[in-house]
Image (cartoon, rainbow, N blue to C red):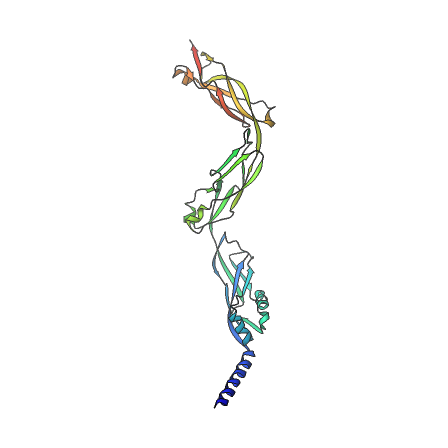
Length: 303
């Protein structure tokens, strides 16, 4: 009896070995990662990312694939235009065959002839970038010369219409840049507040801020004080007749002659005791006013 059992066990092992060495079809799932399309502008409606196949291979090899938990994965470019895109199965079959080649694959049969991707275009809204949360501090005697430039100046958000309608501005993350003494560009990250509202995405995550900077010096200019709104027949006297206007001027503009207008209003003269603060009503864009002296003048109407 014992000899019979030994013979039976040996026979079973031999039969199992022969059976496992033969080629059979085994079901597997192949994973496809679809790439190459704009995930910000488009939402995925459906995609063939899991492909069931039958793989013809020896049983020992199939057991090894199962034992080692092989994850068969292919990255598939979906760069065609349109909302409905497809790629023939034959275009990705070779990539899977290469991954399975160490296991003696004889056949690889899929239950479909193509892999499909369906997209839906998201609604969008374009907003200007605000620098309110960024603070730029200049070294003494240096300052901004002209306007800063933000690139890109606008950001496009993509998402549901109802959510986009509630987003009013795009801010950069709170930032402080100090001791600025030269023209330079700074890369600032956007504050992704839109994410708190739901599935909203932006076409960029950062902007570049260009700051034109120049050294400045202080200059004083004596400017006549005029009375606005007065009839030409009215005689009056302003004490003093001139105001000292102190401004910052960029060194490159020191040879330019600025035009200023300092004035008081005749209606204010009549409504007061004649003591008024002069106002700087006109000055060129390339100067930066500091203050006016005196802070108060007297106007006497001569009857």
